[in-house]
Amino acid sequence: MKKIKAIGVLTSGGDAPGMNAAIRAVVRTAITNGIRVYGIKRGYNGLYHGDMFEMNLRSVSDIINRGGTILYTARSKEFNSPEGVLKAKEQCEKAGLDAIVCIGGDGTFRGALDLSRVGVPCVGIPGTIDNDIGCSEYTIGYDTAMNTAMEMIDKIRDTAQSHDRCSVIEVMGRRAGYIAVNTGIACGASAICIPEHPFSLEKDFLEKVRANQKTGKRHFIVLVAEGVGGVQQMAEEIEAKTGIETRATILGHVQRGGAPSLRDRVVASQMGYHAVKLLLDGKGGRIVAMQSEKIIDLDIEEALATKKTLDPALIDMNDEISI
Ligand code: F6P
Image (cartoon, rainbow, N blue to C red):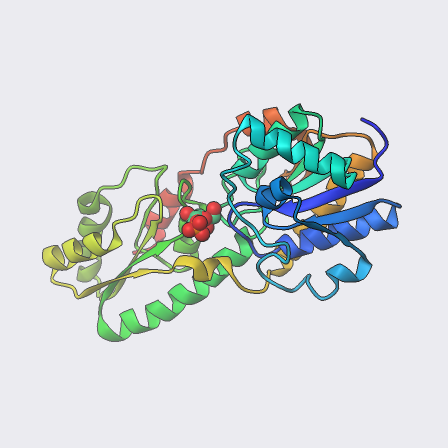
């Protein structure tokens, strides 16, 4: 890889708390090491249209504590074609960008791979509340989103308890149940329903309700991952079969906002720093990841091919203690 003089940084896909802390680390590490940095707006969409601006040390002041992304984000259709990728490459040449740091999820990494293949070295940083990146134990935004969900579910529990009700709550996670499993455990959910694990309403919840009622339990929480969905229907079925008044709540995008937690700020800073150091060492086509609590990096193709599995023992444990 040729010596880097200028890099771009972008955020793409769903935003996640901590993305700003990662942008800050990228900008400051680059400038400290004599590299110019351009903020690319709205992910690959902005790259395709050449919508970028030069950043300085003060461009990232007072953002470490802010949710969302100051660079905005998008899911670009125009970039998603061989012509789109070549147009993005031309924009990099025009602006003098030698490499790009791409913060986001799987889709972002596929874009980074496409660009790396046409000669624009990219480094990806995992940023998504879903924690569904195979190669990394942790993704920026996950901790904050879970804590936000936990606070909201605690509030729902108060009212469910007062009314002797059952609450069926949907948390985010289109393809993955990480948020549902952990917030379910943290909030004492009677049942957790995720895409990765079979769920029978009768066996995994209704039987438990009948048994728990005998020991005096009068309110219940069921946590459902977005990828399973159907909370309203499930609530109606529970009410019809148990006679317990049941309400459905979809927490939705509240989980994606808010000030990042300490963990997200620290991991984002580490990952942003690591990404720029890789480029300084002449290494592109990499994804920064966390493995065994350490910040490491992998080849993008290898990273995209890596799958991770949710530990079903967590659900078994929850079944035994949430009674
Ligand atoms: O990828 C993060 C995520 O929040 C998913 O959990 C959710 O399914 C999706 O993004 C929602 O995307 P959008 O904001 O485009 O509706």
